[in-house]
Length: 334
Figure 1: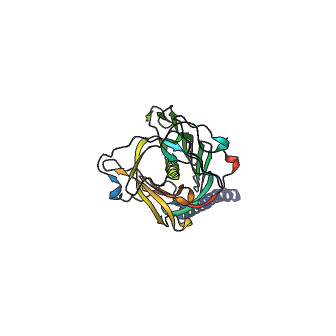
Figure 2 (figure 1 turned 90 degrees about the vertical axis):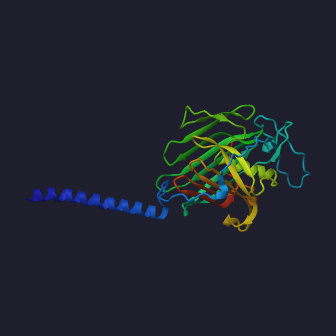
């Protein structure tokens, strides 16, 4: 009789323990969803795109423009003549300063200084954690690394590496990774004139032609910043800049509309500051993919102070500048 009762008690205890464990798990998951949402899943539908961002006629794409790389003026020094560049990837200048030998002329271009930037990361308007962006330059080489923390699934990481060639920033490799999923790579195989072929880990048989000046999703913002550092007299309100852009399995011509230079509080941590707003345009007859808006801040060397990306699912990821710190020398490229 006692043995029989004991045999009944053990399953009841195991069942109670299982119920308790399940209850604790559901409680934890429920609180995480309450505070952080469900990463990468959105139940909202994307809002309509503004009419002024819809391309209804064929836009003429200007050929890529060559750049003229300039150095940051040194304090208490007589300004030097502008250096020029060749069509090949540019060699390092003296002591890591930007600049190169050659006889090329073009649009003034200057890379922003290295630094670590911290951003408040929002998903569908809900604040997550602090994202970190490392922008590192040595001579004419660069590294761009972005880490966006996510609860439960792990960080969302981007990295872009490359150099500066005759057309500006020239990525060599771009990769992304979500949490513990395998990384996805895009490799730029550039020739002497900046053109070449693209290779994708997601699509090994897809090798589209690479145009000079092609950027990845994040390097394009630093290309804009470098052009504005060279001359802020470009991209007046209403003008459109076309840039070939690579994602993890695509190469497309993106058209960005400029809203010009304006003083606003679009970047709260900078207060009322001068910013440049660019928005990605969409073709009327193409299926909706994503909407991208970037705000470049004059006080940040025209680096992005705010980035907003809305996916086709309706999910909105936004990074808003919080603060800047000197770059950790241990992260330097060479």
